[in-house]
Image 1 (tube, rainbow, N blue to C red):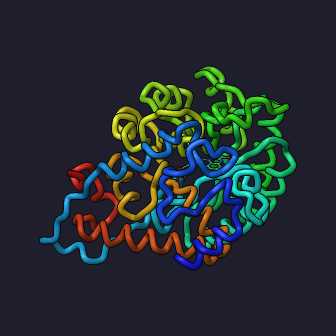
Image 2 (cartoon, helix red, strand yellow; image 1 turned 90 degrees about the vertical axis):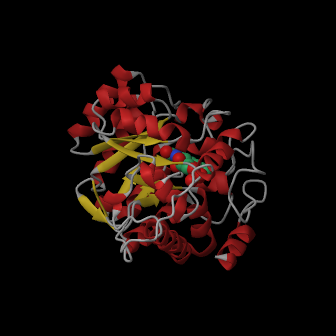
Length: 339
Ligand SMILES: Cc1cc2nc3c(=O)[nH]c(=O)nc-3n(C[C@H](O)[C@H](O)[C@H](O)COP(=O)(O)O)c2cc1C
């Protein structure tokens, strides 16, 4: 990975991401556009801290020597319980050598080969989103595009593009109204209330697609999403980019999973850097975990190979941590493996 990170650092705009040895938000508070967190960067750092504060209960007197980390979710089987999180404006935020279309093409290829989902983020205007979605090329069942909370016309155009590409799952980052860069954009993103969310869930379902609501940080919002008929939520503070001084997502995850885990699929992201972090998120109540910045950095450092290497390291670390906490499969992961 060292060589991959070195190449990524060479390719990045240093004012947008410094490619730190550990991606923890310590030096990139306020770097937005860029890879940083909003304002002081506290929300990004709280994601890291919330996971670091959890400890794994080591257990070795058992026979879980060869754990299995395959996951059945959304009606299909994936090789491990994590995937790459969406990034919208790759060029603006990273300032590297890749456009969103090139980046999407790389991550789809890598994720399909690895046997997990890829995702696509969203940015103002239809054309760049459409160009990124066009790289799906028959692999729609492996890709989850996330469409922001635009006014209806723009949202519907993007939804149609997503359906046409053969995707059967899409999502919305309903927290995107907090992104500083989108406040004054010609087609603004807005906040949705429960009534609006129910309307949008029906629209997405009318295309035969499942709908993931991303950006949930409270039990109240989770209950609204469940009541609106969403299929899944992502417990997430958008990597600390939409509101300063939120808790880490791992802090709020258990109460949210407890409240709505029986009604919909709970996913989570924020500060996940290792297989141990993935296992902690699962133990706290997530079924599927998203990883953003380090995965994007690996893809910028060495395209498909970079992302595949990084995800393989995370998978092997996850399997190691499962073995050392007596988890023979994902069904055996629960809060008792934390101490
Ligand atoms: C540069 C950048 C762009 C992002 N763009 C999007 C986006 O378009 N849609 C979205 O749902 N989330 C977006 N996110 C949030 C990530 O998908 C994810 O929730 C978050 O970064 C996870 O935290 P991590 O980076 O610590 O893994 C973006 C994050 C970054 C750093």
